[in-house]
Length: 127
Image 1 (cartoon, rainbow, N blue to C red):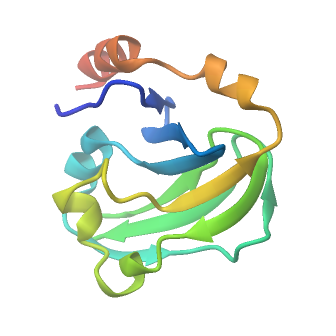
Image 2: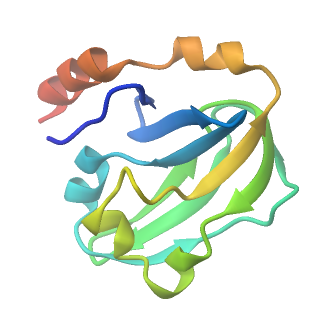
């Protein structure tokens, strides 16, 4: 399983990283492997406010549809529009291709997420 230093993870297999004061959110390598070929990403509208744990998006694959949850509370300020035409980017490079970027209400919520080691251990138990 491919992971990246500095990224935090949720139990629902989203990743989050802070860059220039925004929290970028995507799905982990574990998630994209479990989903299989991704065929559609439902992007939310910028300006939508979310609480941590609320649905931010939906990713559909040939196997299933999966809700994507916000790892932190905040307002969506950007969506990755490239995913509308090429959702398979999430399979090719899940850590390079984020789904939404949030302006966080409280960055300390990132502290509740798993680091790379914790997430690796968590995934090993799920496999």
